[in-house]
Length: 181
Image (cartoon, rainbow, N blue to C red; front, side, top):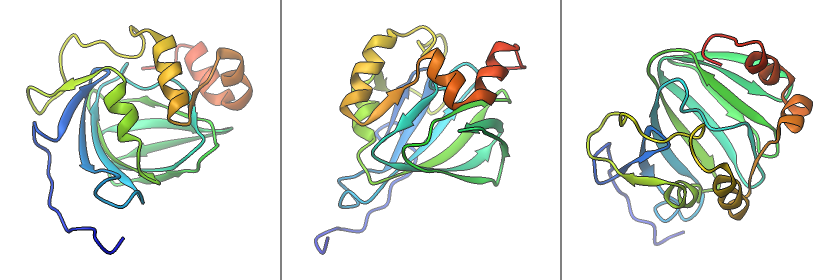
C-alpha cells in the first residue's frame, strides 16, 4: 500500500463509459486504491436500473446527487433523494427503481474491482457526458450474458422466485405496476 500515488480524476469522456443506457464514470478504481475500494458516478433514467441482485464479494454505498429512487434491501424499502446516503451490505439482496427522469449518484464498492464487471458487460466509450439515447439496457440485453459475467465477479442476478422470496416489496412494486416500476 505504501506505493499508492495521489491522483485527481473527474468526470470526463476518458474516464466514462455508456453502460446499459446510463453514463458511468470511473472516479477511483481498484488499481488506484490498492484494491480497497472503487468509486463511480452513475447517471441514469427510469428503465435503466439493474435487475435485482446480490453482491457476494463487496459492500456498496450510494450517495444520491440528483433525483430520487426507491431502494429495496431484503424486506425493507427506503426512499432516497438528493443528499441521502445508503449502505448496502454484501450478501443482501437489493434492487432499486428510479423515480425521477434523471437520477445521479456516487457509489462506492468495497473492496474494489467492480469496474471489471462494468467494462466486461456491454459498455462502450462515452461520446458525450450525458446518457446515451436509444441504448440497450438490461430489459433489452441478453440476460444470460449478464448472469454469466456476474458470476465471474461475485454478482448473482435473482430469478423471479428468488425476488419474491428475498425482496417481497420490490416484487410487489413491479407486479402492481407501481409508477416507474
